Image (cartoon, rainbow, N blue to C red):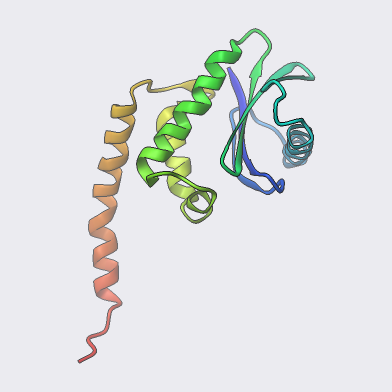
Length: 158
């Protein structure tokens, strides 16, 4: 089971966080600080697996973002690495070559994609096509509402 997923920049700025087990805000801040410090201080060619307390930390850097996932000790590291990679592929498919700014300005969509893929620290859907279909269906539901709001607040300037 996964405990948490953190996305942070090379400067240590937290961009997205998902906690699968209940923790206090103080614990979350301490863990986030520990993870960013530990991962950012590692050499570029180091192994992407760490042992920290009673957890395994798996991280991967894509462009300027680090994706950091904590799993229990008995879980498989390679599956966790595949989970990170699959999430990046889903983000890439939706945003078209995802970058840090996509996550910053569309964080609600990044969380939605993550929730369609993972639930409660377990993989919910393994098929990229199924996740993409549910994301498209959600966008189709939101689009008419956004158009109505835009039309309601637009002025006719002639």
